[in-house]
Image (cartoon, rainbow, N blue to C red; front, side, top):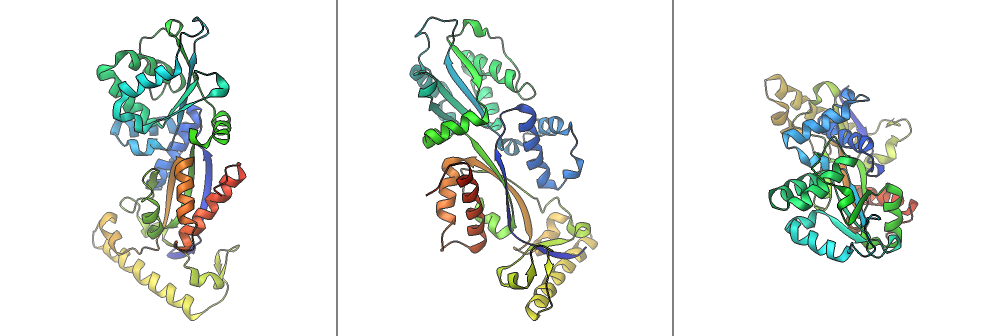
Length: 337
């Protein structure tokens, strides 16, 4: 295998799972994409892989996740013992600037005092560590319940749930989505997509900084044996059979593109051959190099992305990506207009 061309592709992974096993699996897929080590995945590898990332402090990959805690009145307490608005104000006060890493939404259909607090694995891990330094009461509350739902990621703390005025449960994906449909301002779910696109487009995607990203790494991936894959440029579309993933007939323009690509790949291989590491040899790789990137974010971020990128002014390949995103959200009843 030397050089091949593929088309831009968008693969929806849907909502970030609420269950621990499924959530760890998604994080592992994202992380292994960076190193192209998907072949090392097994039925039980997600837990050890994610815990290794946590131990190393590589927490950005853990952002492809979502924990939504529903907080309401504890039935063991007298009515009115729990005040949702007061709890929100206290939480903002103790978390301080870290509140920006979470989403808080009141749930009127679940009771006047019910509210939901959302955050990805990284934000909850760092928030619990922050609370442990000075706000022990809130630290014990969240550490205890997060350990209930995600025992592999969070250590428990001494806490008596029966002695607390609030009850905490885990919101599942269906309830998160229904809340979003009723009130888009709630912004509770996280949606995960995989883009297969060129590195020029990934440079545009990562400008949307409300998202989380994990991208195929040219530092660590050695293309010498796997070959160099480029995204099919628009001017070659008329000569390409998308079903067979091959060119239909010879054409001077096709030959010219192949010649350019083969020359670049040959230079890349020569640099590796003289002892350069992949992270240095990559300097010659083109912007058109195929890259796999996972992108995760909440509805408000995706809506803004689609509004900006599904535009005649946008690059045709990122506009294609935005249109595919639009189709997905249309299919779940969240129209971008």
